[in-house]
Amino acid sequence: MSNKDITKLKHTLFMCNGSCCNKAGAEEMILELRKEIRACGCFEEIHTVRTKCMGRCDDAAVIFVQPECVWYKCVNKEDVKSIVHDYLINNKIVETKFLYKHGESFINSDAIPNAT
Ligand code: FES
Image 1 (tube, protein in one colour):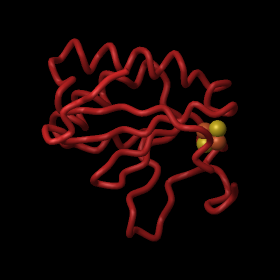
Image 2: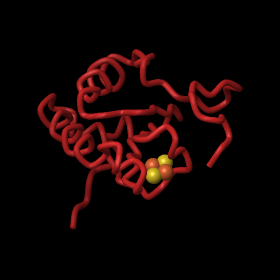
Image 3: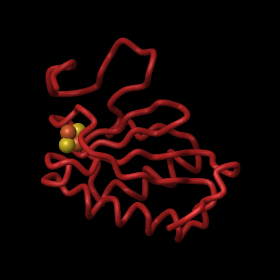
Image 4: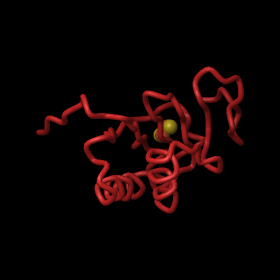
């Protein structure tokens, strides 16, 4: 049981832990991501939550970041450092993993854009 001080949060990451994402290495990536967040001293500012399927299985493994509503695709444990340092700390989109930002009309996916 835990009670995080959510008043200090800058980002919340919803990390898919559904079957497709797990087949794509999500669990390994999630553990690495949490390790990196602690290592860089950002634990108080970045919250991570495992979810079930988020409806983008062809883009597995996916992460959805709030409050900015940015989606990342095909994230594996090798991408963790750039997601944490480039994006979460320095606010620079990781273009190679960018999937979608709410409000835009383009989904950067090789899959059918609205397939579930
Ligand atoms: S299992 Fe992750 S999006 Fe479907």
